[in-house]
Amino acid sequence: MPRVLLGLLFFPRGGSAQVARALARELPAHGWDVSLLTGSLGEGGPSDAHRFYAGLHPHVVD
Image 1 (tube, rainbow, N blue to C red):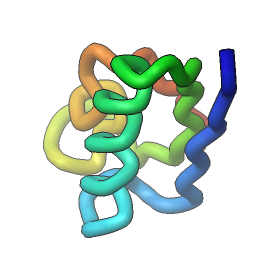
Image 2: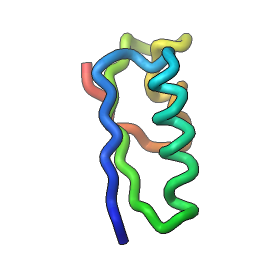
Image 3: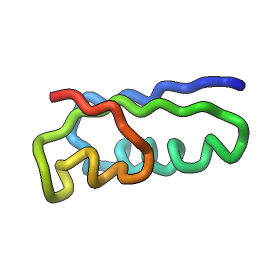
């Protein structure tokens, strides 16, 4: 199974984060194992990586 790591060095809110979220949701249906590494600016709101990437099990770093 091919693997991909999506890494974002900013809090999830902009266009790149939207694309990464869409890819992380779609790639497994095509045989890819996806890991998502992202920054977060705390709980709640659009800067909360766990909320923004809900269901994708992101690896969140500060």
